[in-house]
Each structure stands twice: as C-alpha cells, then as structure tokens.
Image (cartoon, rainbow, N blue to C red):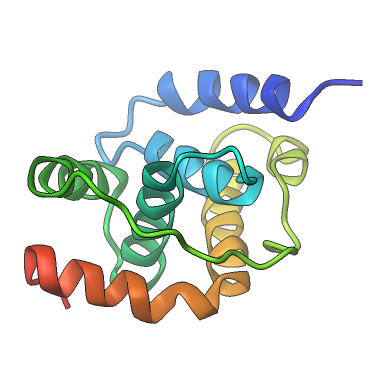
Amino acid sequence: MPTAQDLYNELAYYSLAHGDPAFIHQHVVDAFAVQQADEMTKPIAVVFGLVGLFLHVEKGFTGRQVQIVHMRLASRRKQWPQVNLPERRGNITISDVLAVSSGPERDAMIHRWCESVWGACKECRTPIADLLKCELDIS
C-alpha cells in the first residue's frame, strides 16, 4: 500500500513535468501540505499552503502567481502564526486526484482538490486574508 508521501511523489512527478506555464505543481504542494499537516508541521508550511489555496480558489491565481506571493511573504516576514486546522480537511484526497486520467481531467481534479481542502478550512480565511492585506496589500 503506497504511503501519502509515495502518492505525493507520483503526483509531483506529473505536475512538475506538466509544462504549463501556470505551474499547476504549486497547487499540488499547497493542497497536500494543508491536508497532511499535523502537530510536527512547521507553521510556515501551513500558512503558505493556506495562502496558496486562498489565492488560487478565491482569487484565481495561477501556481506561478502564488509562488511569487510566497517569495514576497518570505522576504518580509520570519515569524508565522499558528493556525488551527480542522480535523477533516476536504473530501477529495490525493488518491482521488491520481485515480483520474492524466491531462485535462486530472488538472481539473487538482483544482477541485484545492477547492475541497480550502472549503474545509474556511475558519482560516480571515487570518489568511488579513495576513495578505497587512503584509502585501492583497485583498
């Protein structure tokens, strides 16, 4: 039985080899980071994952645009807030994404996965939106 990390590696290979300049891989990284986070996960990983999901799902950012925001945030701030994540973080998992055929269908499923994880973390919306407004004037 493959581990979550094995599944992530398989999907990362797909998304990194994708070739789309929108850089869909960033959405994979963010959804997986938030969905798999536990008490050992560094706060920056959780915050960046939530930032990426917020920007992608609510603001329509591409993975490349999210990556640029991550770099800007990292250059401005070194302390990251602890975020309380819900126990259940979406109904779609990485296994569901990999069960879909490669190509446009899988790409659409990656987006649905992001929506599912972000929707489950709706309590995190205000602190993430506030962070982006305060640090980068993104609203």
